[in-house]
Length: 50
Image (cartoon, rainbow, N blue to C red):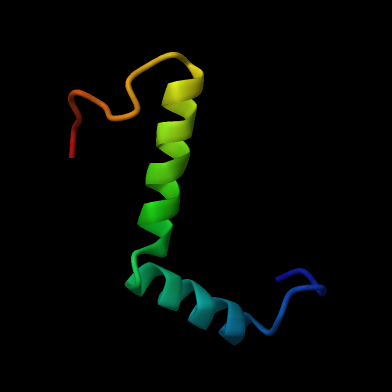
């Protein structure tokens, strides 16, 4: 980890909490919607692969 980051355990714990609370999924979805609108497309995809 870069010297200006917190101790790696603190970063790992923070990431784990964000993941458990669904914050990363929410961030991804919001960013995807913004990009699609900026491109003139429907905010929600009409099809997808999981």
